Image (tube, rainbow, N blue to C red; front, side, top):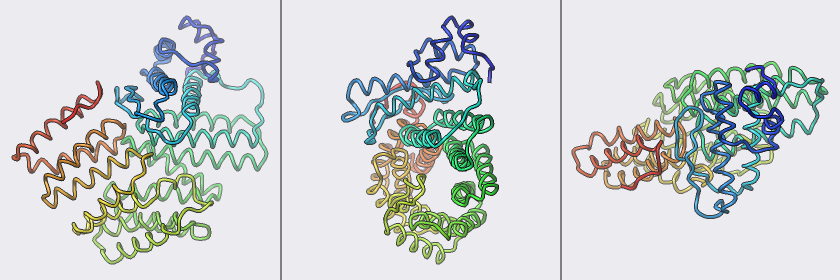
Length: 432
């Protein structure tokens, strides 16, 4: 925190303190020159100017009405990744809501850095404040689903710091305090997910352990389960299947008194992946069979908000990963088709991942023609989202195909995809 007041910062950058205050409160839209001036004064590496690019692109989308027709491609770099082509996918959400959210998160970013948002009088928080923080978390999830990337992580991190400072200086009733700690815990866990999504695995582990400890202190089994399921998936990805199994089983035990069928389905799937990695075929498919049946029970009013992503497509993708671990190519091929057929349009990153997963299966089946036909939209899709996870999936696709680089059309694809991935920071995706 720079510790500057609005007026002191304004004097440094030749803008009025009143204007800076209004921007911070989301009463005025920031301009690029203002953001650039703030970045220079606050040494933020261009983070605020990058966020303005996203705000302006969203405003243009709203003016053009393009949220209902062709997607808008905006080149708005976020959080130090360099300019990235991103697609603002229609999600059935009022674009004004998204614009207002981006505007308010700019204010959060600026206020966190300047330190001018500290209250001079005691603050009393109530139910409306709790609801507002849950809405902010919900909109962060929406932004992550559409764009991903370090920019969303940065926004979540700044929101989390702001909320924690607020808890330290405000007053509230015991019931409000419990509710505020619940949203703080879930925001902490979600920040961990964003860290992992952008390749910051050590930071992800830190935030998940922090959420885990918060849950233990507060006796919050729901947060405990959410943190454990996140750590279970990370352990699997990092090649620690036994730890993954232990965490998934611990989460199931903690959730047993209240878990909904879909939550049980997800936790069983996480456990199944660990069993597949250690080669236990019988237990793997037994757990997946239970997971399928529970998922078929449908949605429940008590499903955690973060469980929205869990559906037939993600289950099929997990089964594909397990089948490959167990060397069962026919099952992996069937599951890869199911995942692509069932993927929901509001999760473009998942679609890229499922495309990449299908390429992996097809290459192992030596079906090179279909593998190439599938790999092209996977690379194009990867250039439209910001995700270390997706980048890793595309690297795996290219690695699978390198063994066939003696085939001219494979060599052409490898050259083209290398060019696209290297140049995606500078413009739209070229066509093969």
